[in-house]
Amino acid sequence: MRADGIFIAVEVEDSAAADRALAAKLAEVCPVDIFVVVASGELELVEKNIDECVLCRLCLDAAPQGAVTIIKRYDNDTQL
Image 1 (cartoon, rainbow, N blue to C red):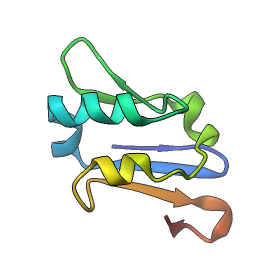
Image 2 (image 1 turned 60 degrees about the horizontal axis):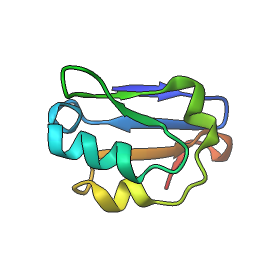
Image 3 (image 1 turned 30 degrees about the vertical axis):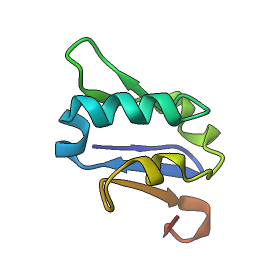
Protein backbone atom coordinates (compact mmCIF):
# COMPACT_ATOMS: atom_id res chain seq x y z
CA MET A 1 0.00 0.00 0.00
CA ARG A 2 1.12 3.55 -0.64
CA ALA A 3 -0.16 7.00 0.19
CA ASP A 4 1.24 10.17 -1.33
CA GLY A 5 1.22 13.62 0.14
CA ILE A 6 2.62 16.67 -1.57
CA PHE A 7 6.04 16.32 0.06
CA ILE A 8 6.15 12.79 1.49
CA ALA A 9 4.99 9.35 0.39
CA VAL A 10 4.70 6.30 2.63
CA GLU A 11 4.79 2.72 1.40
CA VAL A 12 4.02 -0.32 3.52
CA GLU A 13 4.37 -3.86 2.20
CA ASP A 14 1.02 -5.64 2.13
CA SER A 15 2.29 -8.45 4.35
CA ALA A 16 3.45 -5.90 6.93
CA ALA A 17 0.11 -4.10 6.85
CA ALA A 18 -1.66 -7.40 7.52
CA ASP A 19 0.56 -8.22 10.52
CA ARG A 20 -1.54 -7.22 13.55
CA ALA A 21 1.41 -6.89 15.93
CA LEU A 22 3.40 -4.75 13.51
CA ALA A 23 0.35 -2.65 12.66
CA ALA A 24 -0.20 -1.91 16.35
CA LYS A 25 3.47 -1.03 16.84
CA LEU A 26 3.51 1.37 13.89
CA ALA A 27 0.35 3.09 15.08
CA GLU A 28 1.90 3.39 18.55
CA VAL A 29 5.26 4.87 17.55
CA CYS A 30 4.21 7.45 14.95
CA PRO A 31 4.07 10.89 16.59
CA VAL A 32 1.85 12.34 13.84
CA ASP A 33 -0.66 9.49 13.44
CA ILE A 34 0.16 8.43 9.89
CA PHE A 35 -0.68 4.81 10.77
CA VAL A 36 -3.97 3.54 12.18
CA VAL A 37 -5.22 0.05 12.99
CA VAL A 38 -8.71 -0.61 11.65
CA ALA A 39 -11.33 -2.97 13.11
CA SER A 40 -9.92 -5.95 11.18
CA GLY A 41 -6.57 -5.43 12.92
CA GLU A 42 -4.85 -4.38 9.72
CA LEU A 43 -2.88 -1.21 9.14
CA GLU A 44 -4.15 1.71 7.11
CA LEU A 45 -2.44 4.94 6.19
CA VAL A 46 -4.08 8.24 7.14
CA GLU A 47 -3.58 10.17 3.92
CA LYS A 48 -4.33 13.59 5.43
CA ASN A 49 -1.41 13.09 7.87
CA ILE A 50 1.23 11.93 5.37
CA ASP A 51 2.77 15.37 4.91
CA GLU A 52 2.96 15.78 8.69
CA CYS A 53 5.81 13.24 8.74
CA VAL A 54 8.76 14.66 10.69
CA LEU A 55 11.22 12.08 9.31
CA CYS A 56 11.85 10.72 12.82
CA ARG A 57 12.51 7.16 11.54
CA LEU A 58 10.52 5.57 14.42
CA CYS A 59 8.39 3.57 11.98
CA LEU A 60 11.49 2.40 10.12
CA ASP A 61 13.09 1.30 13.38
CA ALA A 62 9.91 -0.53 14.48
CA ALA A 63 9.46 -2.49 11.26
CA PRO A 64 11.57 -5.17 9.58
CA GLN A 65 13.90 -3.72 6.97
CA GLY A 66 12.03 -2.89 3.78
CA ALA A 67 8.55 -3.25 5.27
CA VAL A 68 8.05 0.52 5.49
CA THR A 69 9.49 3.09 3.12
CA ILE A 70 9.41 6.85 3.58
CA ILE A 71 9.93 8.77 0.35
CA LYS A 72 10.89 12.42 0.17
CA ARG A 73 8.97 13.49 -2.93
CA TYR A 74 10.44 16.99 -2.71
CA ASP A 75 13.95 15.52 -3.05
CA ASN A 76 13.64 13.52 -6.29
CA ASP A 77 11.85 10.66 -4.49
CA THR A 78 14.81 9.96 -2.22
CA GLN A 79 14.13 7.25 0.35
CA LEU A 80 14.73 8.04 3.98
